[in-house]
Amino acid sequence: MKILQDWQLAFMLLWESIKELKYLPRQLNRCFEHGCNMGYKTLPIVGILSLFMGGILALQTGYSLSKLPGVQSYLGSIVGLSMCRELGPLMTAFLLTGRVGSAITAELASMSVYQEIDALRTMNLSPTRLLVMPRIVGGLLMMPFLTMFSNVLGWIGGWFVVKTVDIISIDGGIYWRSLKQYVDFDSLNDGLIKAEVFALTIILMSCSIGLRTKGGPREIGASVTSTLVQSMIAILTLDYFLTKVLL
Amino acid sequence: MTTKQTSVQIEVRGLCKQFADHVVLDKLTLSVTPGEIFVLMGPSGTGKSVFLKLLAGLDRPTAGSIRINDIPLEEVKKQQTFVLGLVFQAGALFNSMSVFDNLALYFREHAICGEDEIARRIDRVLKLLNLESTEHLMPSDLSGGMKKRVALARGLLMQPDVLLFDEPTSELDPITAASIIELIGYVNRKLNITTVVVSHDLALAKSIADHIGVLQNGKIDEIYTKESLLNSKNAFVQNFLNPNINIQHPNFGTLLS
Image (cartoon, rainbow over all chains, first blue to last red; front, side):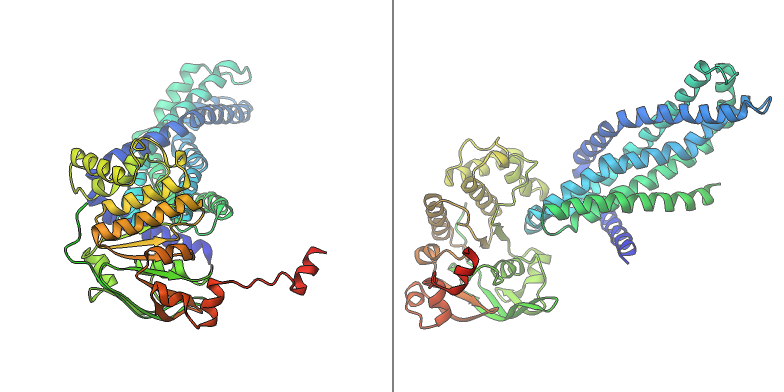
């Protein structure tokens, strides 16, 4: 089965990358470059979508809670916990897949098709050391910042709805107090653990599929599609099991 | 660039490569003597590039062995006993890097020497190949011939014991092709590097080859010199060198009607 084979090959690539970590000091520039590139590419879209996600969540939940007297004061905690435990990491991971995962696959697949990977091997240079390991390190360094940025923007989106929509009859101060009361370090930490696992999965899957691409431009396109599909399936599957473990 | 003190010998014995049911190389056996230029010819799709990939250690044979100075190729690659430089058909330059960075990558990643020495070596090889003032250009800014010369420069900078060329004159105009042929001969004479060229360019074989093999059904029946190739009695070789295309063939009429 292709999915299982892709998972297996991605796992083998992880093992190879771990073995290449001893060359990390010489690859620090590349790690930093990839990390910045990933953050720069993803930050604006994460910001916009998180703002609206938090707003929509507050609007839907606030409207439902308005029918139950006295419980609207919990809106801050609902938006806060939903964002940091689930929606922040998940949405950032989906955006990372679309913006970064697809770009990694396209770049590596193109390098593979046009024999640049073979050229590296001829020079006795490991593609894993030069192309995969720095991306993994860069992605793992950047993902917590992106996720925290998403969480905070989501909370601000929720607060904006509380402030501006009449059917939600609570004060902004109550929203923030409720959020602060329930969102603790453990909740944030759980979300960040998920985010790191998702980032690792996305980068491994996109590198693994990209490096194995053979053929021509059509196969490069097929590889990008495959990365998107496989990564999303992997993210949702892992999310379920991680949620069970971290609850 | 320094002349190799001792050139290496390549021994290929019973080399087979099969993709699913398709046999590309069938018990191929040949020997390339130290410092010579061996040209492997044959029509498109006969497995010349596959052979070169096996020789460069980029793919594994289904059966058979390749030995360099009597050391198995896997050992050579693992221990880095000898350096094999491969000049790819399309150059295979790293598109995201400038010419200078393409050439410097090998030195930087293997930590062979400092930046000043890298710049000095690159400057020297670029002058040798008439590529001065291209250091800052990107591969997309180069012509086909320049890309091949930069790829050759990259191969030479590795100070290889064996130089492999995949279709070095393909997609080039006759003048650029002639200059590339001349360059391969010059590098071989000057540096005494054992060279294997895969090509279907007869002009290349006639001007620089010491020995020539013609790949037919995954095998080489005979090793030729420049002179003996032209006088070969082998019908396949004769047809390859002097193709007899019958324009009166009935199928042409059907296709054009």
